[in-house]
Length: 335
Image (cartoon, rainbow, N blue to C red; front, side):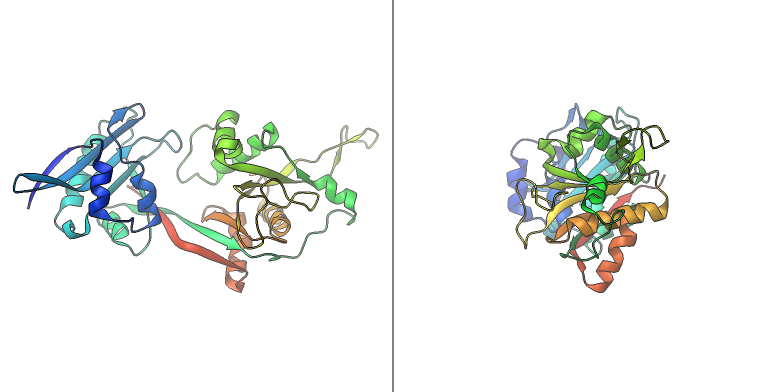
């Protein structure tokens, strides 16, 4: 076997697809989309390994390393080798080449990270290369009516209306809480500074797939603290943002693009990060009870999402929720 290495060229994706076949894992499918010609804006280096047989070069493996504007403290890296060329050192050689390129990244960042599925060849390769898990993520589908509906204030409709609200995804108040929550639950891999505009682009505008949001507020407080003025809205304690399909609104209906009774709606569920542990758990629990009352919802659950885990894991144990697909591990070079 004579192996030659070169930079990625247009058309390599089709040639490799013939050799590789379909992706072995969800993560592989995602990372294949990052294989593209090297460039500096954004910075990316992509290498192809060819098996040269009788003077004919056939691409059999590829690797990429690139910077990311979100979570900039590490570089994303990915290596894939055709099944019949594994255990011959190609993956290790490509990884060594990626590390050499990473050492010259303009950001000065050289630590690598990747996503793998536990128990797969990719996970074993990452472990052998010294990359260790820094986070576990699961897609969890919560069945309808998993929790008893909450009672707000005196139990009246007006009390519920005061605390549960449909909120425009363009809301600056919502953007602020979403951005701070995302940062708080990603201390293990900092997203860097998130402006309101960045939060809108990533989570809340039409291009992000966001369709609607409902929020949970604290009970109303007096505008001046003495009860002699008109009440103002309580602080935002929790949020649920729907993607691709609708979630039940504050009025008990559903927003545009409502989900069917069987297809789960993807939801980003979080809370004001300044809340105490019990308050955060209560906010997440109440919102989940509301949005999943009639329709199933799908949540991305990272181990770092402490409040959400304390609510969802008992549902997993009782069979009122289940993990869809396999777990994902984010693995990284040591600090």
